Image (cartoon, rainbow, N blue to C red; front, side, top):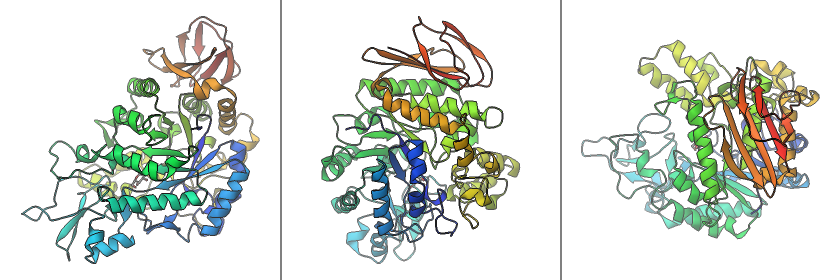
Length: 546
Ligand code: GLC
């Protein structure tokens, strides 16, 4: 496979660009912005789901995998997008939500109507003798994971929203249907797939209460997951070695990821894991705030880098996506050092071993939304948790503070294209409010400013294409006990590269090995290599020697 020098750009379609003035981004909007994406330099676009859907979870509740929601476009427009992107050497990656379907999906509707064939596509179960749900598992969006259907006298399983019913992958007919979907899109010229929460697809045969957690130990990285991934690989994308696949792995383990993304295992090209994005969760709880733990962050990143390399497996590298708050607001300083810390986070990630993913807006330094009213929040998880936290007795001021840090809406606001009406995203009121800082943070301004974060991303993408040490080099942790610097060394056939990143707004110093290095990229005026270096706030430097 040949994805080492590629950079993927994630498009959250609803917020990317509205071409038909209905307040929602759309496929035509992507076509209109292809020249911009080409200018950024990315090679592949992961587009979040645009299939027919009631949109209870913004398209992650799919009602028809092979039809396009008219709000987003038509099949013709999609085909044009594939063609137009190809002209610019950009491939299209689709988002396959195969752990569950919308309850509006024809299969689920038939199941509800009593068709046994389709009932077996899902998990329908009787409650416990006292009428309570079959297990005490929690839905990831709050509440119990089972929904009662009065007319049937049975519950169905939904690990996410109650309108997202989990599919039964143990049923071969389900796997056949899903392979058909993949082959349908492959024929349309799609060159990659992202698989939503794909490590949750293999459920246990016996459903039991979880007295220690929320149920995840029973279905995460389940018994048959590797087998099922190998099967769909063989029956669809595995036939073409150029196809890129990435699995989203929820609460996974390194041991499993080595297999999911191992060269020899024929499952997926690479994986997203989220351990490094839980270092600011208090006791692993998303809705309890804590300062991020630098030591935990760096030790996780080093360990995954080293172990994945040792086992010949490949990482997907990312800070941001549509489920995460903006990294600049989270790990950087979006008020005092937005440019420096935005560039530092970019360099640190893009020079590691793996395929980097840029989430729309990250490349121009978009920040969290900092909404202050509940009616500005759109996401089902945020609105559910607003109520849950209230019931838990958390006061409203604190709840807003938590949402401003953790809500998925933080990264789902419209892209700030310019400083005009609605930030140039649409001419009508957008589905989600534009962030107030669009007058200064926007694409047009970033294109004009040679010192912008955008220009830094462009340089990083160019370097990855030019320097094999970035795309193919080995990885070695450096300065492991440093309290504020994350550093590593990459090596490849006589080339070596040292990357040092100050993660804080305070100056610090580092002791480096013998010299001979020159600076390849930095976020302050060019620096000479020295054995002892004083680093500025959020300073980040890439040194190189051959
Ligand atoms: C994934 C998606 C997220 C969605 C969930 C359920 O985590 O990225 O947006 O809500 O799966 O499909």
